[in-house]
Length: 307
Length: 307
Image 1 (cartoon, rainbow over the protein chains, first blue to last red):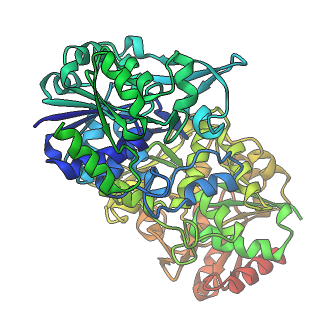
Image 2: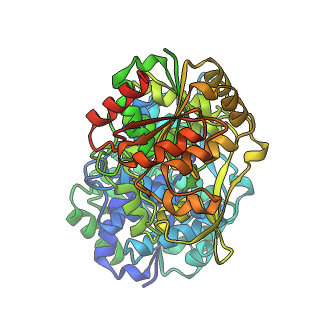
């Protein structure tokens, strides 16, 4: 079975960690979000791609869900000693990844090729493709009319701003990276990981061609709800869904994905949503989606595979 | 007494470490070599400036003479894990310095201002000025006609190449950084540190205006021989002096500095050279110049101050 997955960061990576235990990782293609990519000190940082790759490589910092386990923080401590701001954290080994990625990009290597090199070198057998080789930047407009870069909103301000609009700058002019549309067309099954529909899956669907390609495959697309009992398991999805006028519920997300997704996995704790989802013409699958351990993630993946 | 010193890397830093113990560091201005500056992974590295600053800040790695004491090496280990070459070593905390320097330069801050910020933040009271804010790059032509970047020659190839010519690319069009000529004009005493005359002091003297300014002050200029008993204490000075047709001896260096330096400190082990140096019309001062301990460096500085 060839599997394609649309993925954001930590939530997606947890599920994918289960998926690679449930099937041959060589048959998995992961399409990653680059809307939260950013430059720090001139380094090109791809947080979601790295979270997925580090997780599948078994080197992720499990406490935070991002960065490299047992990494040190000397480089940024030194910049702070020299007077720099310190709100964005990058471990030393992680900086090594960014140094090389940035050098390769500067040399004209496409982000998709850079990403492939990194995942191969780290021994990740699943294919990981950024949604686009072109720059797409998620920006958030707060209720003061300020336009915030994603990391400014998410990390520096700890997603405390009240948000009025979300914009994927550059998306309209971007194209899917090589392999993205093929992976959607040729997959036996496609999974939309339990990531933030607004700022993790949203940027991927905003790349012209991806949403359309998914909609032609919607019968084999399985969405997984990132909302359980009316709240996001992680991050600000519950604050951002209303911004795009989506109800903060499994039903709301299933409805939001209606054009691209004919099967929707919701948590068994949200049983009442299942009926409403079925009424949309979407198969509702009730499972334990709260991945507190890798075993839960693996079981969830296996159950979706056999659904 | 206002003191100005021309400095390369490790040899100079050892002496300067003694000088700041022998007088008020606030009265010292150090003019540093930037001919061996380089870009690694897009980071602007200023090895000689950093060696001097780290040494005076008391954080230098005393085993190597460069880098930060007890630094880790995770970032570059990660780049190697991802397939990069590993010949140039940069510690993690050291990378922090380069990240911020590079960001400041990208923002349009001059290298002289960047250097001043770094030395102040690290608590270095002596003023440290790069020879120029413009790019000067030391290149070495080997006997195969290859043009080598300085760090390629010095670090990667361990200065094993036979060299035919040394070029300071960009020097002819460079200007002294703000404060350099003033520091030469207004100093009560000027010291040419025991650095490589070819590739450490050479680039400084190649910046138009500096050699001329020094020559008008030559009566107060004190050179210190980096050659003891016909050999360089450190580095390839003994291999490079013949390239510029300078005899590998204290006398040879004194003669090389003849137009800019009326006083020359040579090691007492080279007593026979003293007479020849005096015959040049240069005051020869015989001292212990082999700075095996900070105490020797301090005594050397004190003796030069009282000479």
